[in-house]
Amino acid sequence: MRLLAAFACAVATLPAAAALYKWTDANGRVVYSDQAPTGNVKYEVVAGAPPPSNPNAVKEMAQKEVEYKRRAKDAADKDQKTEAQRVEMAKRLEMCQRAQSNIKQLSADRVALVRYNEKGEAVYVDDATRRKERVEIEAWVKQNCPQS
Image (cartoon, rainbow, N blue to C red; front, side):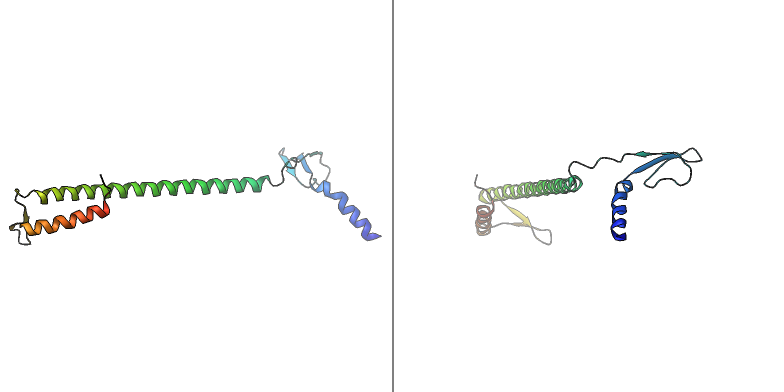
């Protein structure tokens, strides 16, 4: 019987535990507390905030925030990858243009081609070397450059 009375008292005090009390202390400050003031102090019970209509609202907002940040990171990663591909294509195009220019120089038989050796002396490029280098560069162009 005592156990039942204690349980009834505990259940009856649950709504009071959720109450919010407001009073003015001796210094004139307004005090809010979840416990009633002690002594002969005039106080009022203030209703707490109503429970949210969706008890999972906070969790859902946190999940949406995480999803938003993930999408933003994915978009930034994609932009970074796209920019890296663009830079790589620009480098490749420049290399292809240089190779085409070298092929033209090597194809001009009437123009003397001069290179400098390690001693800084001018050395003329002979026809066999021209043909060999031209074939190598043309093979590289065929493998690495878009057909124009």
